[in-house]
Image: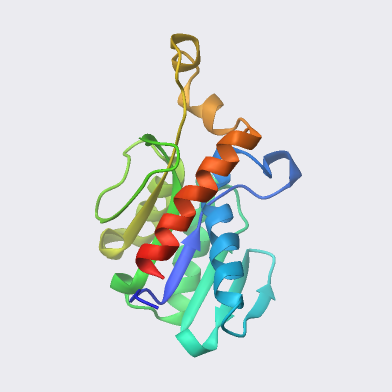
Amino acid sequence: MQTNFKIIFGLGNPGTNYSNTRHNAGFFFIDKLKDYLADSYSVTEENKKEYSAVTIPNLDLVLVKPLLFMNNSGIVIRDFLKYHNYNPKKVLIAFDDLDIELGEYKIQQDKYPKDHNGINSILEQTGESGREFFFLRIGINNRGDEQEKKISGIDYVLQKFSKQERQKLEEGFEGILQNYF
């Protein structure tokens, strides 16, 4: 495994109403990574009211899905990091990014969209340490024609992926896994 991350948070919204929406790309990534690593390593799952976590002890890695709504995910992340005392430079936040084309991604430190409420919640709750996190910006933008471009960002991210879009997202995940894990 090539990553130095010790904890990876995947952002999304809980509940069946949001289960296949673009805004849940972070949850999808955590699920994909868990399945990918479970082929080679033992995993331990922990489910709490505020989060769902998977620990891979051999890799000293924890995968976490905050179970509050996206706009409050910073509360869970702040509390989890405070309790477990992780180095912020070892934290990766995976989330949907409407500024990046579907199937593409970027991993950057201190680079994120300014109008993403989940990221804003994290930065508000974690203060300066949040600026040390790394961000996996998962591209979800597939608005091709002019009509689709008129859909507000808020409405677009809450739409469900089509089967073809989900396939393209999964192909992007394969690239992340090959390059970083």
